[in-house]
Image 1 (spheres, rainbow, N blue to C red):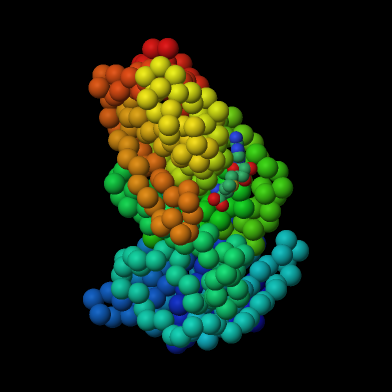
Image 2 (cartoon, helix red, strand yellow):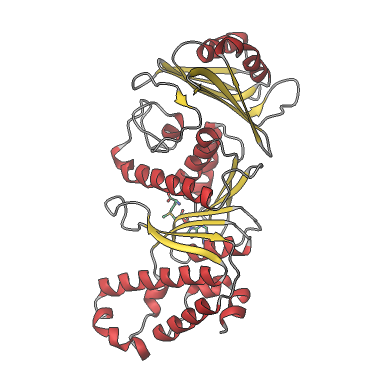
Length: 399
Ligand SMILES: C[S@@+](CC[C@H](N)C(=O)[O-])C[C@H]1O[C@@H](n2cnc3c(N)ncnc32)[C@H](O)[C@@H]1O
């Protein structure tokens, strides 16, 4: 980074109205960097304003607080690393400094939207993970908000879904004892599509909650993966990657598996991926339940439901519920503490059920196995979740 850009960043971070600085991307300094990313933000500790430096390396994060008057030296140390992507937000402006492979320094500056922000109380977690109304480079790159922080009307539902999903993630990580494991969490986002959730979760965990996390988004559609890679490069975030492929074909062992609206049986494949890979936590929001809808027959014990199943819409909704019932029960059989919740209001998406599962119970609980067999017998079907979970599951339930 040239002297002018360095002075610009230093003045913004140490000056009045500083909100947040993120240093990431490739490093172009002379010596190898000890960190993959550094985040600086103002905090209030015991009533006094400090600058908090969070240093992330591949395995852990370290946090140090400095009075502003003593922060010039640690800031110079971070600048010397030569991160290729530097973003600084103040009450007055947003500054982007990008250093190309050839060493060219590109500086972008624009006026900030919204009023001045007070220093955040130490470790305070905001109720809205990604608030609106102020310029946010991530939301802009994601295409959710305009440069001055206004959520695009067409993206309002997605914005709300992502925020509510992130709230669930925050609670679930604490519930699964994953919020502080002393190393970066590996998180797999199945059927990541345009990577709204992947990017948002990466930013929220690493930059806001201070939970080091590596995110991998996988999708079968090569075009969306290419676009996601480009977005990842624009936000210059370390520990963010994308792979084109089918869910379940990946040889991954993530700590956490996420799936937001992975179509039809892709949700089952995501569940199976979580179980097979030993993931401690799974958060899955299913959609387009076609597989069981085709199989449901009002024969056998389910004959009594014929009046319900003859109507297309009732049949469809029944198939949705039965599919998710089988999924949640199969997870219980496999030893996961599982529940199903509404993660967001139906006005934001009709597909608003979330299956939450935390690994840690013995598998093959006789009560759950019996429930599963009875449910199968009642409906006269073999749900796809059984196929996806394969031999280890069949060994428990028979079949
Ligand atoms: C409705 S989109 C949801 C995208 C994203 N999770 C979101 O909520 O914005 C579903 C995505 O799942 C992907 N998909 C469907 N089946 C898949 C499979 N078997 N393996 C990988 N990706 C799959 C599709 O290509 C699509 O991008």
